[in-house]
Length: 197
Ligand SMILES: [Zn+2]
Image 1: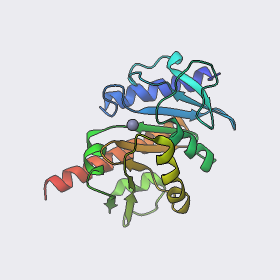
Image 2: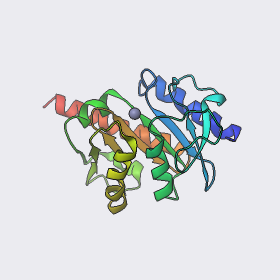
Image 3: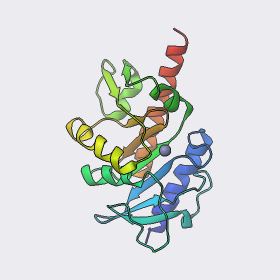
């Protein structure tokens, strides 16, 4: 079972993501770690701005719903992978903003000298931080297998999928939202910067 406070925190994050236009249509998916064997995640095909507790379901680390008949988000395995590989991660948020979608079609994204990079724990703004971009693939198991060695070798601040959207994470739902907000701010800045060149 998904603890009520965890479901409510995810529903609230969904409403905030919707208010920023990061989850158009039924796009995006949100999750949080319940314990060492279970993850709470949005079910497939629901609007993330109107989540109820019934829309947040429990899956195991292989992405299988713990209640018969429930269908988790199509991208569940990408969430499971992050919890499996990185024990400090408590929540994962994924959205399809305009900036993430457009910029990710142009290859890997480098953020240089932005003050807000400090939101990711860096102590200076004087650095180049790469947001990796992976090719989109409707076969999520294959995509997860492709990503795995790359994020193990060099854990990124988040990652984008080309023409698709962005993944962010944090220790809690609130922390993941902060980091997603910082990442979206960076993407928006970078989009504006390229546009004004
Ligand atoms: Zn997606």
